Image (cartoon, rainbow, N blue to C red; front, side, top):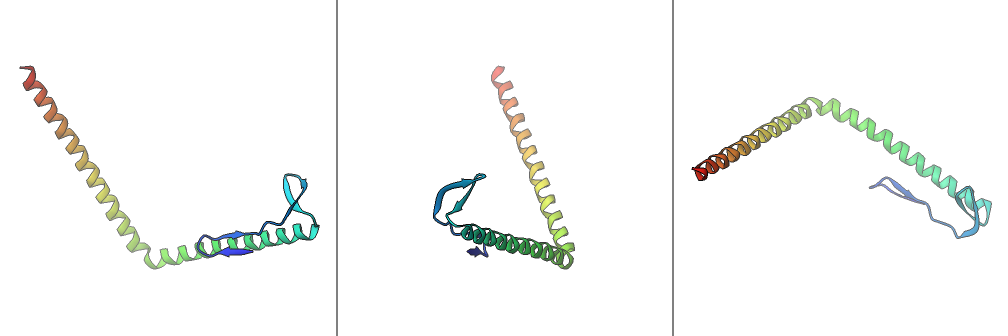
Length: 108
């Protein structure tokens, strides 16, 4: 079993699969092999659950330590996005007004 800390995924080595397939689940020739693979799967699941808990704990600590500053940063980003959108709308309206004016001139 190999757990990749970067992706948080676990790879369970696949045994030689026999022709025997039960309930859509592939099992190897011996029951011990299937039990071993299920144990490895459970170990990976436990590893992933611990990782998720740690992520939640870290989120809480980061929010407590930097929350106010991050809120201000998010507000600044939102203000910048709003200003950019408004400037784009003004630019589009100006272009449309210019096109309308040219069209009126050519119709004279």
